[in-house]
Length: 452
Image 1 (tube, rainbow, N blue to C red):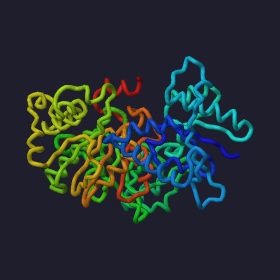
Image 2 (cartoon, rainbow, N blue to C red; image 1 turned 90 degrees about the vertical axis):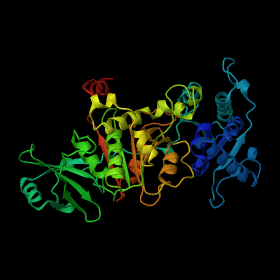
Image 3 (tube, rainbow, N blue to C red; image 1 turned 45 degrees about the vertical axis):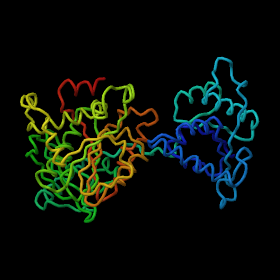
């Protein structure tokens, strides 16, 4: 049985082409949603751009017929779904306690269509607003999030895995320093999980699990090559755990153009990323500039409420980056850091370093740069695509963030930009991912991440 899906504003603003993702089912857009879209059109952000795209799509469809009567969405589909713009003069169908707003207008249309189509069609409200889903449920209207933008993964890719080898094979790997993926005798309980390019592998000896060797999968040769853990540091920062060792390896590898680092607060993601960028830019001269950026997405009031000029307004969001830069430029010496002025300003004046928000990234081309994007979990998949397509010749992009710590109201673990990139690029030979699990900021910070 065909279904009817009523789309909320946030669905269209997140994906203007969501209208076309319901195939042979009918799509209804309340007129109040059109009005709300119109208020976003002049916005200079990605939301404004999407609002304008929605208007263009609807205007083009309008030329095929009358929107209130239904427009066929797919001309080449025999049983195509249709698009309706519903005027919804039915607010009296709701209790008086509910005010006249877009959400309640959508509820009224849902209740009206339920009554009109009873026994013929199921009616659903599609929204990213959890409160609207709760209210819809209270009125007996099925409501759901937009599923097309969610990744269906049973567990998220971590970038490393452990394999137990029979003793003889473990010794062979130790001597030859290379092993073919097809020749590995994997234990039954470890057969699940594919190995991807630049995947780190921890081999354990079946006879003595305390004996371990490390490897990294070469997707071209289909072999796992011996990986030597490094103890030396860069810019006074030394890797403190296995994940940081793995991360430094891919961060310093110029053949890997995209690196994603995920993990809880205090695990060192941003620090090792910026340290690697400074090293590659200043010591090795492999890149023209280190560009560090993060989305300006406040947990409290918006940037316009803050006093001062643009730099002063941005400072609260950029300060975590400045803190890492000061620590690195002090050689990792905390006591020396306290006595330092902002020496990173010298790198900025020389054109070797830039710290800026992501607000104006669209339209730019970034060749030969080491580009670190912090807090990438607060970006939508579309915004991440915009960032990655800015990469010019010779540019390396590093995305860091914690998918479990999202400030965006309409993003979650399955549809945020960082998770999206990790899953979509895990089969690419020019990308790598490392998941950080061990806190290194302080004993208190680690304990807080675990207990709170």
